[in-house]
Amino acid sequence: MSDQGPESNTELSPLERTIAAKLSARADAMEADLTRFVAIPTGTGYSEGLARFRAIMRARLTALGAEISEIAGESKPAWITQPGQSVDAAIPVSLRAVSQSAVHARARPILITGHLDTVHDPHGPFQTLTPTSATRAEGPGAIDMKGGLVIMLHALEVLAECGVDCAWTVLLNSDEETGSLHSAKAIQHEAREHARAHGIGLAMEPSLADGSLVLERLGSSTFRIECEGRAVHAGRDFANGVSAVNALAARILEAAHLVDLDAGTVVNIGPLEGGPAINIVADRARAWGNARFRDAAREAIVERGLRAMTTAPDAPLPRTRLEYASNRPAKPETPAVRALAEEVRAIGEALGETVGFGKSGGVSDGNLMQAEGLATLDTMGPRGGNLHRLDEYIELDSMAPRATMLAIMLARHV
View 1 (tube, rainbow, N blue to C red):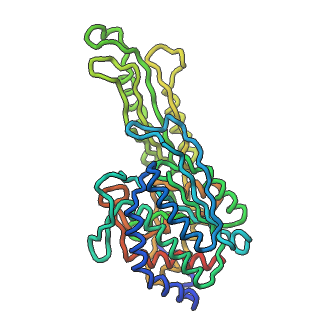
View 2 (cartoon, rainbow, N blue to C red):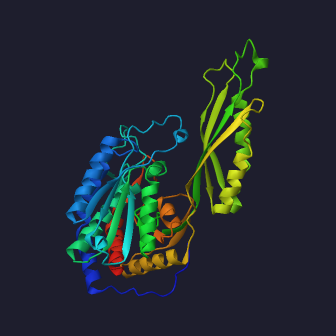
């Protein structure tokens, strides 16, 4: 974590104290909303639950006078679907809500993004918000990111109560957990428009466990290595077979040599798909992987290394083919991002909250937003941990303070 930045104004105005008091008084209402939201199963691709949750968000944002629209999603490459994943039955839409002040360009525009989906099985045992102490509760998506959506709603509602005329646009997608492949273009378009208008970006991802803001993220890409061989019966004709599985194993080991932890480069192979039976030499094998990198130059090194494994379409067997998609660019710390973070830290200090700064190897839609030139803070949500696990938790007592930091920051950008 970094040391304290330059001295900032840590005094709250009378309006800001009123905002803080109103949001503190909403702590129970926030927990009630969180309980209701968590109980709606919204695993990526579960259209029924996502539609229910989207309708709730639509109603709450409509009540604030926002103009509501839905943005159709884009198709994603078929090869990205991994073994065990279902092909999307329907491409999800993104929900866009624009405040009246933003419609009429009366203030500095602010893009707030969030995602409705979680990684959790909509039919699994982890279905509800369960308190584990006076200040902590576990539940699917409680911290990633339904808690962030709760505090966003309450912050905007309190600002409306106080007559603060913010020019916000809220964009909520339903496929962030699988890379925002359907919604990336919508996010990028909104980010570009806000950048042109000298706006800022905020995403409601959770803070780090200690409340720190993430100022720097690695980038991410997805790839598939596919090997082709010749199928034969393993007992009768083994010598004439060409094993795609063996070829793939060699390619996986080659990919492992691209890892460079000192440079921040990670290459990881996950799902595998091989032959249909143990007594058949496999004629096809596939591996899906993910790369992480600090910048475009390091990504280029990874992509070149992976493509060097490929063979010509008419080369002797075994043959290797690569599919590659750059998913999210790296998100470096910039002076503009640092300035936004210092603002939040100063607000936190005035509220008695310590806000540190950190880095993450994880990615978010904030990567997409910042790559379009929009200075973006993407960890404005509450504190919690164990993301994507069956003991995912949220610190309930962090919701009101984080909502207050968000609301005051928005008010200061009017």
